[in-house]
Every structure is written in C-alpha cells, then in structure tokens.
Image 1 (cartoon, rainbow, N blue to C red):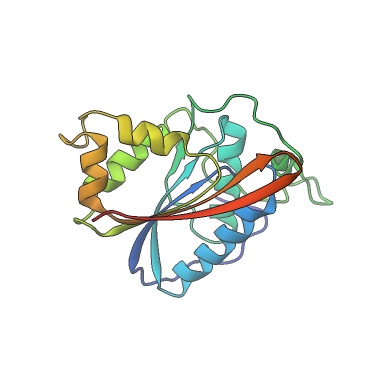
Image 2 (cartoon, rainbow, N blue to C red; image 1 turned 120 degrees about the vertical axis):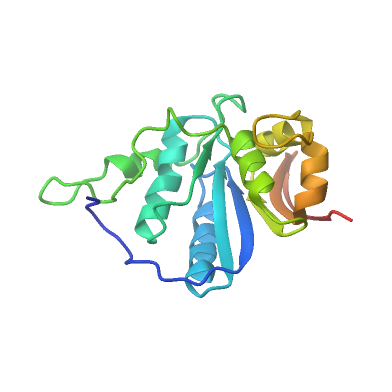
Length: 198
C-alpha cells in the first residue's frame, strides 16, 4: 500500500505516446516540465510510456518515482542511467526530498518503485518502448543530459528489436524535442532543439 502525499488517482484516456528524458536532480525545469506532462496525461492528451532519468545514480531515479507516485502515475516505467556523467554538479540536491518526514514521522512523499536494481538502463528502456510502439508514433521530450539517447543511437540489435538504434529511432520516433543548457564565459545560452525524423 502506498502511503504519503498523493495528488490523487489518475483517470486519463491516453493519446500521444511520449517518452520523457530528464536529468532531474538539482533544478526546477524538470519539475515544471513533468508537472505539465502529468497534467496533459490526466487530460487525455498524452500517454507517458516511460521516463528515462539521465542523471547517473539511483537517488535521481527515486525522484522520478516520487513524481510518478505523487501525480497518480505509479506504473510509468523508469529507466536508470548507469554509464553516464558521473558526479555531475548539483546546486540544489533534490534527492533530499526522499528523506523528508511528516510530523508523525511518516514519509512526506510516497514511493512506489523502491528498488531500482531490476530497472532497465535508460537506453534499454528506450529500445523496449520503441520496439513496442507503432511506426513514427512516439515523441521524445527531454531536458538536460543526452547520455541515454546517445547510447540508444549507438546501440545494436537486442532482445527487444533486431534493428540498430538509429534505425529503430528513425522508424518509431515521430519527433524529438530537447532543451539543453550551454555554459560559456560570462553567459548562459539556453538551447532548445527540435529534430524531426523524416
């Protein structure tokens, strides 16, 4: 039984298949984007097929689980980054959310997936979800690192698909939207990329 704070039971009629790729962990952009995505799912506009956590470490995957559980989508699968950017810089460590307690000592935020050892690597979850999808049906939306996406593109045939990564993406993905940040001397340039696979 899931305890703690919850936004309620999700009762959506899903539509547009979406995979969300996030480096959740130290800034609010991911939180706001996920908030909007869950609300779109609740309104029947999207079907969130999976969440790929691109920041290395299971503590960050736990944040995605907190979000899934809080918004009423505990069954959305979470892909874990195990071979990405190690020890990435954190300005605010949101992993502490998992340790917050209510006055009675219970967890403030409920969890559903409490053991990530059996969760697929991010790129493997991509491969599984894309293999199950209709051709040119999936939109990939991402914020931050692209480690899992690169691993997907460089991947070979496996138990989920006979296609190499690039061909799997070309066949199954309708479009890809990524927001990234490039840090330079004395300036921060936000880059929003939209790639359409023709």
